[in-house]
Amino acid sequence: MKKNIYLLIFAVISFLFIGLGSVSAEEKARDDYTFGEIETMVVEYFKENNVSIEIGSEEYNNYIIEQMNTDADKNLANHKDYHLICAYFAEYLHRLSLEEAKAEAEIQGSFKTMQSQSDEFQLNNEVKETTLGEMKEEIQKEELAAELEKKSNFSTMATGTINVGNARKYAEKYYKNYNTAYPKYPLDCTNFVSQILLAGGKRLVGTSTTTLVKDTKAWFIMKRPDNTFSRSTSWTVVTDLYSHLVRTQGSYTNSTKSHIIKNAKSGDVIQFKKKGADRYSHSMWVYEKQNSNLLLSGHTDNYLKRSFNAITAYYEYRIVQM
Image 1: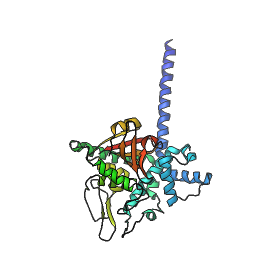
Image 2: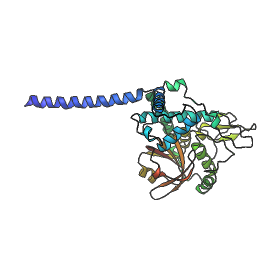
Image 3: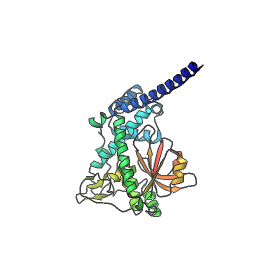
Image 4: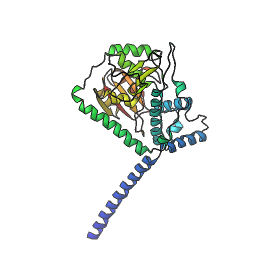
């Protein structure tokens, strides 16, 4: 009898170890993929499905944006490795937004898009050779640094820091007809959110004639005498805007929409992360809070009152409480 009990215990322990081992192996497999390998998956998918899009083209950039926002290509959304592809897409968009921020926009009295600056964008070899696990560690360090900065400034956290009425007026005027006083980017979501916050009374932080300021303590965009712009990455890059704002503002993260709605208010910033991705890739502004919904303003896809509940392509959300 005792022997049978010992055998049963041994079998249970062995099962647990095997189960844990298989989970660990799956996690390791996911984290061992490089971004270059996943890009090859996308190329192969295009070939198999007769999709005539070149990596790095304007069409490719738009395809990724639409896929992240709406899962437009249903076949791709059902791909067995879609979670890997989403991680690659999120990092691609992040690197694209950094590249856009580096490019100088010459306005010279007329509206100009930054699209031509990113038509031939490619991930560099260093990024392509980086594994998801290595990038995840880098992102976690970035987010930890932002959280530590947030905690060190906790006594200065404040809400009601912008005039929501003025911010709404700006969103109403420019959500569709872009403000020609600013550069327009293919990834324009965070640029537009920054404009709304400025219109609502948020103060610029730091100015410089340097083309690009990467220190997220700064938040500004400035036209120079030669009609080019200097800016901080926090003005246009999703993750950098968050890192800047949480220096003085509270934040809340959740994957359940009802919890986000409960903790949000009109005037807040909201950001989105795709299932499978490690990095947030989209920003919008809370135009209005309703009893069980949020109405959101944003660019890239132009909306004034986009229903938060109608957005189904994302998995996790975070708000910055303005």
